[in-house]
Image: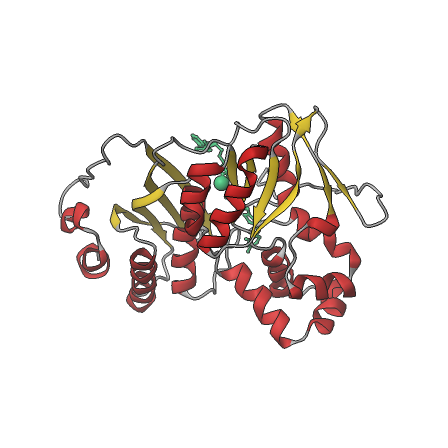
Amino acid sequence: MIAAFFAPIAGEAGLGLRDDAALLNAPQGRGLILTKDLLVAGVHFFENDLPGAIARKALRVNLSDLAAKGAAPLGFLLGLALPPDWTPDWLKAFAADLAADAQDFGCPLLGGDTVKTPGPLTLSITAFGAAPAQGMVRRDAALTGDALYVSGTVGDAALGLRLRLNREEDRGWIGALGAENAAFLADRYLLPRPRLALIDALGDHARAAMDVSDGLAGDLTKMLALAGLTADVALADLPLSQAARAALEAQPALIETICCGGDDYEILCAAAPEKALALEAGAKAAGIKLTRIGQARRGAVTPIFRNAKGEVLRFERASFSHF
Ligand SMILES: Nc1ncnc2c1ncn2[C@@H]1O[C@H](COP(=O)(O)OP(=O)(O)OP(=O)(O)O)[C@@H](O)[C@H]1O
Ligand SMILES: Cc1ncc(C[n+]2csc(CCOP(=O)(O)O)c2C)c(N)n1
Ligand SMILES: [Mg+2]
Protein backbone atom coordinates (compact mmCIF):
# COMPACT_ATOMS: atom_id res chain seq x y z
CA MET A 1 0.00 0.00 0.00
CA ILE A 2 2.78 2.40 0.92
CA ALA A 3 4.82 1.53 -2.17
CA ALA A 4 1.77 1.98 -4.38
CA PHE A 5 0.23 5.16 -2.98
CA PHE A 6 2.71 7.07 -0.88
CA ALA A 7 6.25 6.27 -2.06
CA PRO A 8 5.62 7.86 -5.49
CA ILE A 9 4.62 11.16 -3.89
CA ALA A 10 7.29 11.28 -1.15
CA GLY A 11 10.10 13.84 -0.94
CA GLU A 12 13.79 13.02 -1.23
CA ALA A 13 14.39 13.02 2.53
CA GLY A 14 11.76 10.26 2.75
CA LEU A 15 14.30 7.85 1.20
CA GLY A 16 11.66 6.28 -1.00
CA LEU A 17 9.68 5.32 2.14
CA ARG A 18 11.78 2.17 2.31
CA ASP A 19 13.56 2.87 5.59
CA ASP A 20 12.40 2.96 9.21
CA ALA A 21 12.69 6.73 9.28
CA ALA A 22 13.36 9.80 7.18
CA LEU A 23 16.56 11.81 7.22
CA LEU A 24 16.01 15.54 7.19
CA ASN A 25 18.95 17.93 7.21
CA ALA A 26 17.89 20.69 9.57
CA PRO A 27 18.66 24.15 8.21
CA GLN A 28 21.95 25.65 9.44
CA GLY A 29 21.51 28.04 12.33
CA ARG A 30 17.71 28.03 12.19
CA GLY A 31 15.38 26.51 14.75
CA LEU A 32 13.32 23.50 13.72
CA ILE A 33 9.59 24.17 14.22
CA LEU A 34 7.39 21.14 14.92
CA THR A 35 3.61 21.05 14.88
CA LYS A 36 0.92 18.39 14.81
CA ASP A 37 -2.81 18.34 14.15
CA LEU A 38 -5.11 15.35 14.41
CA LEU A 39 -8.29 15.13 12.33
CA VAL A 40 -11.21 12.76 12.85
CA ALA A 41 -14.11 12.09 10.47
CA GLY A 42 -17.30 13.52 11.92
CA VAL A 43 -15.33 15.91 14.12
CA HIS A 44 -13.09 17.92 11.77
CA PHE A 45 -14.57 17.03 8.40
CA PHE A 46 -17.46 15.02 6.97
CA GLU A 47 -16.99 11.35 6.29
CA ASN A 48 -18.33 11.84 2.77
CA ASP A 49 -16.00 14.74 1.89
CA LEU A 50 -13.95 13.98 -1.18
CA PRO A 51 -10.70 12.17 -0.30
CA GLY A 52 -8.67 14.97 -1.87
CA ALA A 53 -10.41 17.60 0.25
CA ILE A 54 -9.66 15.61 3.41
CA ALA A 55 -6.01 15.25 2.43
CA ARG A 56 -5.64 18.94 1.64
CA LYS A 57 -7.31 20.02 4.85
CA ALA A 58 -5.11 17.74 6.96
CA LEU A 59 -1.95 19.20 5.45
CA ARG A 60 -3.18 22.78 5.34
CA VAL A 61 -4.20 23.05 8.99
CA ASN A 62 -0.64 22.10 9.86
CA LEU A 63 0.81 24.54 7.35
CA SER A 64 -1.34 27.21 8.98
CA ASP A 65 0.42 26.55 12.29
CA LEU A 66 3.81 26.82 10.57
CA ALA A 67 2.76 30.07 8.89
CA ALA A 68 1.74 31.54 12.25
CA LYS A 69 5.23 30.87 13.56
CA GLY A 70 6.89 32.51 10.55
CA ALA A 71 8.24 29.08 9.62
CA ALA A 72 9.10 27.90 6.12
CA PRO A 73 7.81 24.34 5.51
CA LEU A 74 10.40 21.53 5.35
CA GLY A 75 8.23 18.43 5.24
CA PHE A 76 5.64 16.34 7.02
CA LEU A 77 4.82 12.90 8.38
CA LEU A 78 1.39 11.38 7.82
CA GLY A 79 -0.41 9.10 10.26
CA LEU A 80 -3.41 7.41 8.70
CA ALA A 81 -5.96 5.15 10.41
CA LEU A 82 -8.29 3.77 7.73
CA PRO A 83 -11.75 2.39 8.48
CA PRO A 84 -12.62 -1.10 7.15
CA ASP A 85 -14.47 0.28 4.08
CA TRP A 86 -11.42 2.03 2.53
CA THR A 87 -10.84 1.44 -1.18
CA PRO A 88 -7.79 1.74 -3.44
CA ASP A 89 -9.63 4.40 -5.46
CA TRP A 90 -10.22 6.46 -2.33
CA LEU A 91 -6.56 6.21 -1.35
CA LYS A 92 -5.40 7.03 -4.86
CA ALA A 93 -7.44 10.25 -4.92
CA PHE A 94 -6.30 11.08 -1.40
CA ALA A 95 -2.62 10.65 -2.35
CA ALA A 96 -2.96 12.61 -5.59
CA ASP A 97 -4.36 15.73 -3.92
CA LEU A 98 -1.97 15.40 -1.00
CA ALA A 99 0.89 15.36 -3.50
CA ALA A 100 -0.47 18.42 -5.30
CA ASP A 101 -0.64 20.44 -2.09
CA ALA A 102 2.74 19.17 -0.90
CA GLN A 103 4.19 20.41 -4.19
CA ASP A 104 2.34 23.75 -4.17
CA PHE A 105 3.31 24.57 -0.60
CA GLY A 106 6.85 23.19 -0.81
CA CYS A 107 6.26 20.70 1.99
CA PRO A 108 7.21 17.15 0.96
CA LEU A 109 5.84 13.95 2.48
CA LEU A 110 8.68 12.32 4.44
CA GLY A 111 7.03 9.30 5.98
CA GLY A 112 4.27 8.21 8.31
CA ASP A 113 2.33 5.20 9.40
CA THR A 114 -0.81 3.48 8.12
CA VAL A 115 -3.12 1.26 10.18
CA LYS A 116 -6.66 -0.07 10.08
CA THR A 117 -9.19 1.11 12.64
CA PRO A 118 -12.71 -0.04 13.56
CA GLY A 119 -13.49 3.63 14.21
CA PRO A 120 -13.87 6.64 11.91
CA LEU A 121 -11.14 7.74 9.50
CA THR A 122 -8.46 9.47 11.54
CA LEU A 123 -5.43 11.35 10.23
CA SER A 124 -2.58 13.01 11.93
CA ILE A 125 0.05 15.16 10.29
CA THR A 126 3.23 16.32 11.91
CA ALA A 127 4.81 19.17 9.99
CA PHE A 128 8.32 20.53 10.22
CA GLY A 129 9.46 24.03 9.38
CA ALA A 130 12.50 26.26 9.55
CA ALA A 131 12.19 29.11 12.03
CA PRO A 132 12.74 32.62 10.77
CA ALA A 133 16.31 33.90 11.23
CA GLN A 134 15.05 36.12 14.08
CA GLY A 135 13.57 33.09 15.87
CA MET A 136 10.09 31.58 16.06
CA VAL A 137 7.21 34.05 16.38
CA ARG A 138 5.79 33.03 19.72
CA ARG A 139 2.22 33.00 20.93
CA ASP A 140 3.00 34.49 24.34
CA ALA A 141 5.13 37.48 23.39
CA ALA A 142 2.64 40.34 22.88
CA LEU A 143 3.25 43.50 24.88
CA THR A 144 0.91 46.23 26.01
CA GLY A 145 0.36 48.80 23.26
CA ASP A 146 0.93 46.27 20.45
CA ALA A 147 -1.28 46.60 17.40
CA LEU A 148 -3.44 43.49 16.80
CA TYR A 149 -4.07 42.16 13.34
CA VAL A 150 -5.93 39.33 11.66
CA SER A 151 -5.38 38.09 8.10
CA GLY A 152 -8.02 37.43 5.46
CA THR A 153 -11.61 37.36 6.66
CA VAL A 154 -13.07 35.67 9.73
CA GLY A 155 -16.18 33.56 10.22
CA ASP A 156 -16.58 32.26 6.68
CA ALA A 157 -15.71 28.64 7.44
CA ALA A 158 -17.93 28.48 10.51
CA LEU A 159 -20.80 29.82 8.43
CA GLY A 160 -19.89 27.30 5.74
CA LEU A 161 -20.18 24.52 8.30
CA ARG A 162 -23.66 25.67 9.34
CA LEU A 163 -24.56 25.87 5.69
CA ARG A 164 -23.38 22.32 5.24
CA LEU A 165 -25.34 21.11 8.27
CA ASN A 166 -28.41 22.92 6.87
CA ARG A 167 -30.37 22.79 10.12
CA GLU A 168 -34.02 23.78 10.15
CA GLU A 169 -33.34 27.00 12.10
CA ASP A 170 -30.70 28.11 9.56
CA ARG A 171 -32.85 27.75 6.43
CA GLY A 172 -33.88 31.44 6.51
CA TRP A 173 -30.45 33.07 6.21
CA ILE A 174 -29.17 30.25 4.01
CA GLY A 175 -32.03 30.92 1.59
CA ALA A 176 -31.27 34.65 1.59
CA LEU A 177 -27.56 34.21 0.75
CA GLY A 178 -27.62 33.53 -2.96
CA ALA A 179 -25.75 30.74 -4.72
CA GLU A 180 -22.43 32.56 -5.09
CA ASN A 181 -22.15 33.52 -1.41
CA ALA A 182 -23.18 30.03 -0.36
CA ALA A 183 -20.55 28.43 -2.58
CA PHE A 184 -17.90 30.80 -1.22
CA LEU A 185 -18.68 29.92 2.42
CA ALA A 186 -18.88 26.19 1.71
CA ASP A 187 -15.44 26.33 0.10
CA ARG A 188 -13.98 28.29 3.01
CA TYR A 189 -15.09 25.48 5.32
CA LEU A 190 -13.74 22.74 3.09
CA LEU A 191 -10.38 24.17 2.14
CA PRO A 192 -8.25 26.26 4.50
CA ARG A 193 -5.81 28.73 2.93
CA PRO A 194 -2.62 28.59 5.01
CA ARG A 195 -1.15 32.10 5.01
CA LEU A 196 2.41 31.02 4.26
CA ALA A 197 2.88 34.13 2.11
CA LEU A 198 3.01 36.05 5.40
CA ILE A 199 5.98 34.23 6.95
CA ASP A 200 8.61 36.83 6.04
CA ALA A 201 6.48 39.73 7.24
CA LEU A 202 5.70 37.88 10.48
CA GLY A 203 9.31 36.86 11.09
CA ASP A 204 10.52 40.40 10.45
CA HIS A 205 7.82 42.47 12.13
CA ALA A 206 5.40 40.53 14.37
CA ARG A 207 6.00 40.23 18.09
CA ALA A 208 3.50 37.42 18.68
CA ALA A 209 1.23 35.29 16.52
CA MET A 210 -0.98 32.22 16.37
CA ASP A 211 -3.35 30.81 13.82
CA VAL A 212 -7.08 31.17 14.33
CA SER A 213 -8.47 27.64 14.31
CA ASP A 214 -10.96 27.57 17.18
CA GLY A 215 -12.57 31.02 16.69
CA LEU A 216 -11.25 34.57 16.80
CA ALA A 217 -12.73 35.52 20.20
CA GLY A 218 -11.32 32.48 21.99
CA ASP A 219 -8.00 32.47 20.17
CA LEU A 220 -7.47 36.19 20.83
CA THR A 221 -8.19 35.48 24.48
CA LYS A 222 -5.63 32.65 24.45
CA MET A 223 -2.89 34.77 22.88
CA LEU A 224 -3.39 37.83 25.06
CA ALA A 225 -3.97 35.96 28.34
CA LEU A 226 -0.53 34.37 27.98
CA ALA A 227 0.92 37.88 28.25
CA GLY A 228 -1.48 39.24 30.90
CA LEU A 229 -3.18 41.38 28.26
CA THR A 230 -6.64 42.09 26.90
CA ALA A 231 -8.18 44.25 24.15
CA ASP A 232 -11.32 46.01 22.97
CA VAL A 233 -12.48 44.93 19.54
CA ALA A 234 -15.14 46.79 17.58
CA LEU A 235 -17.18 44.49 15.36
CA ALA A 236 -17.02 47.23 12.72
CA ASP A 237 -13.26 46.61 12.47
CA LEU A 238 -13.51 42.87 11.82
CA PRO A 239 -12.67 41.79 8.27
CA LEU A 240 -15.80 40.10 6.94
CA SER A 241 -16.35 38.72 3.47
CA GLN A 242 -19.25 39.87 1.35
CA ALA A 243 -20.84 36.46 1.97
CA ALA A 244 -20.48 36.76 5.74
CA ARG A 245 -21.97 40.28 5.59
CA ALA A 246 -24.94 38.95 3.65
CA ALA A 247 -25.45 36.17 6.21
CA LEU A 248 -25.18 38.63 9.08
CA GLU A 249 -27.68 40.98 7.49
CA ALA A 250 -30.17 38.13 7.18
CA GLN A 251 -29.47 36.81 10.69
CA PRO A 252 -27.67 39.23 13.08
CA ALA A 253 -27.22 36.49 15.72
CA LEU A 254 -24.67 34.86 13.38
CA ILE A 255 -22.09 37.25 14.80
CA GLU A 256 -21.42 34.64 17.49
CA THR A 257 -20.68 31.97 14.88
CA ILE A 258 -18.46 34.42 13.01
CA CYS A 259 -16.41 35.38 16.08
CA CYS A 260 -16.40 32.02 17.88
CA GLY A 261 -17.04 29.26 15.32
CA GLY A 262 -13.49 28.47 14.20
CA ASP A 263 -11.97 26.73 11.18
CA ASP A 264 -10.72 30.13 9.93
CA TYR A 265 -7.03 29.24 9.60
CA GLU A 266 -6.18 32.90 9.46
CA ILE A 267 -3.26 34.51 11.30
CA LEU A 268 -3.76 36.55 14.43
CA CYS A 269 -0.72 38.62 15.35
CA ALA A 270 0.58 41.46 17.47
CA ALA A 271 3.14 44.03 16.37
CA ALA A 272 5.00 46.71 18.28
CA PRO A 273 3.60 50.15 17.34
CA GLU A 274 6.82 51.10 15.56
CA LYS A 275 6.67 47.90 13.48
CA ALA A 276 2.99 48.10 12.55
CA LEU A 277 3.44 49.97 9.29
CA ALA A 278 6.24 47.67 8.15
CA LEU A 279 4.08 44.63 8.95
CA GLU A 280 1.20 46.10 6.96
CA ALA A 281 3.52 46.83 4.04
CA GLY A 282 4.95 43.30 4.21
CA ALA A 283 1.48 41.76 4.10
CA LYS A 284 0.49 43.99 1.21
CA ALA A 285 3.60 42.99 -0.72
CA ALA A 286 2.71 39.33 -0.02
CA GLY A 287 -0.80 39.89 -1.36
CA ILE A 288 -2.50 39.00 1.94
CA LYS A 289 -5.12 41.20 3.49
CA LEU A 290 -4.19 42.11 7.06
CA THR A 291 -6.66 44.08 9.17
CA ARG A 292 -5.95 45.95 12.39
CA ILE A 293 -8.57 44.87 14.91
CA GLY A 294 -7.39 46.56 18.08
CA GLN A 295 -4.58 47.23 20.50
CA ALA A 296 -3.34 45.09 23.35
CA ARG A 297 -3.60 46.54 26.83
CA ARG A 298 -2.87 45.29 30.31
CA GLY A 299 -5.76 43.49 31.98
CA ALA A 300 -6.90 40.11 33.21
CA VAL A 301 -10.36 40.28 31.59
CA THR A 302 -11.19 38.48 28.33
CA PRO A 303 -11.10 40.73 25.26
CA ILE A 304 -14.29 42.74 24.83
CA PHE A 305 -16.21 42.76 21.56
CA ARG A 306 -18.55 45.74 20.97
CA ASN A 307 -21.27 46.24 18.39
CA ALA A 308 -21.93 49.44 16.43
CA LYS A 309 -23.91 50.88 19.36
CA GLY A 310 -20.94 50.30 21.68
CA GLU A 311 -22.73 47.47 23.51
CA VAL A 312 -20.59 44.60 24.82
CA LEU A 313 -21.38 41.25 23.20
CA ARG A 314 -21.84 38.22 25.39
CA PHE A 315 -20.73 35.06 23.68
CA GLU A 316 -21.99 31.77 25.05
CA ARG A 317 -18.78 30.00 23.97
CA ALA A 318 -15.83 32.10 22.80
CA SER A 319 -14.44 29.26 20.72
CA PHE A 320 -14.71 25.65 19.65
CA SER A 321 -13.54 23.19 22.27
CA HIS A 322 -13.34 19.41 22.10
CA PHE A 323 -13.98 18.97 25.81
N1 LIG B 1 -1.44 15.16 23.58
C1 LIG B 1 -0.52 16.14 23.65
N2 LIG B 1 0.73 15.86 24.03
C2 LIG B 1 1.65 16.82 24.08
N3 LIG B 1 1.44 18.10 23.78
C3 LIG B 1 0.22 18.45 23.38
C4 LIG B 1 -0.83 17.48 23.29
N4 LIG B 1 -1.94 18.12 22.86
C5 LIG B 1 -1.58 19.41 22.66
N5 LIG B 1 -0.29 19.62 22.97
C6 LIG B 1 0.46 20.88 22.91
O1 LIG B 1 -0.31 21.93 23.49
C7 LIG B 1 -0.10 23.17 22.83
C8 LIG B 1 -1.43 23.75 22.37
O2 LIG B 1 -2.02 22.83 21.49
P1 LIG B 1 -3.32 23.14 20.68
O3 LIG B 1 -3.66 21.92 19.90
O4 LIG B 1 -4.33 23.73 21.59
O5 LIG B 1 -2.77 24.22 19.68
P2 LIG B 1 -3.58 25.22 18.81
O6 LIG B 1 -2.62 25.79 17.83
O7 LIG B 1 -4.31 26.14 19.72
O8 LIG B 1 -4.69 24.35 18.13
P3 LIG B 1 -4.83 23.79 16.68
O9 LIG B 1 -4.73 22.30 16.89
O10 LIG B 1 -6.20 24.21 16.32
O11 LIG B 1 -3.76 24.33 15.80
C9 LIG B 1 0.87 22.88 21.71
O12 LIG B 1 2.16 23.17 22.13
C10 LIG B 1 0.72 21.38 21.50
O13 LIG B 1 1.89 20.81 20.96
C1 LIG C 1 -17.92 17.95 10.72
C2 LIG C 1 -17.41 19.10 11.50
N1 LIG C 1 -18.02 19.46 12.62
C3 LIG C 1 -17.55 20.48 13.36
C4 LIG C 1 -16.45 21.19 12.97
C5 LIG C 1 -15.94 22.33 13.80
N2 LIG C 1 -14.62 22.12 14.35
C6 LIG C 1 -14.14 20.90 14.60
S1 LIG C 1 -12.58 20.98 15.23
C7 LIG C 1 -12.56 22.67 15.18
C8 LIG C 1 -11.40 23.49 15.67
C9 LIG C 1 -10.09 23.12 15.09
O1 LIG C 1 -9.72 21.81 15.46
P1 LIG C 1 -8.57 21.47 16.50
O2 LIG C 1 -8.77 22.37 17.71
O3 LIG C 1 -8.74 20.02 16.81
O4 LIG C 1 -7.30 21.77 15.81
C10 LIG C 1 -13.76 23.15 14.68
C11 LIG C 1 -14.10 24.57 14.52
C12 LIG C 1 -15.83 20.77 11.78
N3 LIG C 1 -14.73 21.39 11.34
N4 LIG C 1 -16.32 19.74 11.04
MG1 LIG D 1 -2.66 26.71 15.95
